[in-house]
Length: 259
Picture (cartoon, rainbow, N blue to C red):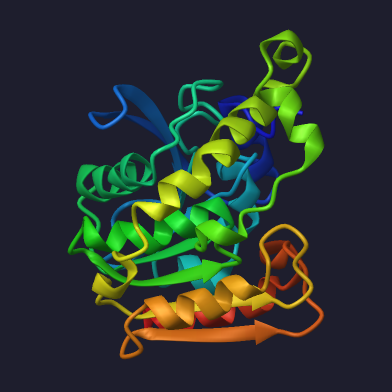
């Protein structure tokens, strides 16, 4: 239940697929920790960065690094968000701004240009805010992003991650997820007026059967992003797990944003 793959496991995974990848770590000034990055390379003039949700790690998007139509055109990059994977595992970073600063640092660290961000769930929130921090982001794809502070859903079992008497019983990745979850509404309130400032193309995919991030988040986004840049798409009958159930659709939309 760690939701992460070690460097050895990552290399073995891609070796079996005959895909060359690079594993690197860079020092984040925003979080004072090393951030692990897995990429097909850093040498192309276009890049796609995948930002995972909660709980999870960069390995959630490994399948996309093996996609020929993507990595022929761009550097395909995923990373472990602070608190997950091998980026300070167990030590949560609950501020959206700080998480987004890590994205901007990653872009600067590897001199990336023409970047398309792809963020899922909590990662979608970060992908939405990061364009305000880096001029090298050209577009962003939001997949079931949690944006509306009034729509945050809580489950009784999540309390176990917040009670000291039970926290030790819960897997570390779930504790980090709980720390993010129980501070997310407060963090989102701070940025309600920021979404209208985003001035790159924003495409949002939202399933109308999503039980984790309510469909109404799409309505919130339509009313808070600048309509000149925002496009929302309803996925009929789709749940929260679009990156894995609709991989072809996700790739098609990434390629559209790249072009």
